[in-house]
Length: 327
Image (cartoon, rainbow, N blue to C red; front, top):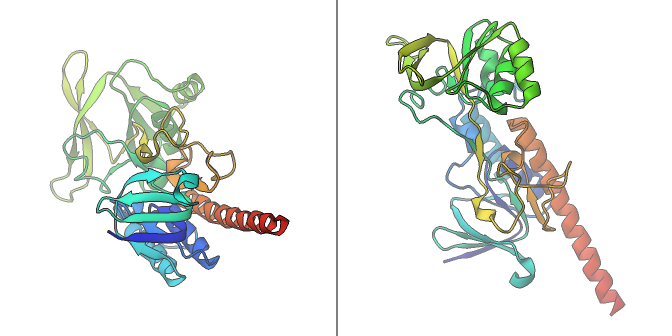
């Protein structure tokens, strides 16, 4: 069992965590990044990336994360392979540090803590979903909708996320179908009104997705197989792209009872900042962002977390010096 200490401990290694690491290392905080179960975050399972600033051509998600990690290491970040199983955010009881424990027993202590554990898209769990991921099946219209310009697409779901995704896709497609397993939507009324009023969107009610159908020749998605939840009738809906939009699950279970979360489970921060209710603990990326969920916005909040962590340490040092001077 080893104890690792740092001025800035970062849990999570997606765009948010690695951006925090780059800024933290450049500020001399010698950050440690604990990479977790999915080093690199969701971009490691994303193939084509066309909307990250600075690249004219399509790049690969895994490559982008490798470059971010290499940059973080180059400026002084320590990358450690471990999965955090518990955290203690009572710094006063721990000698002024936030403490995390890995599944192998190693202890990680940081004067500041940056939480970048992300969120995972919820999937249907039906046959063909994972096999056709990146080949027509996606969980992010904002990320991948551009690849379906002028093509037929479907969105699966009935909440705010599904309706927002469907409306977004009308920027690229004139044939958008929303598939919902019930006969009414759960989305906010204003979103429903916009959806129903849009000429390029149709809604298919009472249809549950059975599986995704791929082309035998090229392996690309060609249809969504559905069952009518009222009659039991089976059918297929032809499509070039299918977007699963049944919500996201933020990775916040580690912090239950220690940090505040909203109704959807996302960490609550002071608006416009990555600051949680505990001074010295910051949250960035998808774990606190249920609105945008983009690599570039995650990276931006990671930068903010590092800058605020640096300012927190500077203020803490100033207060300690002032206290010593007064004594």
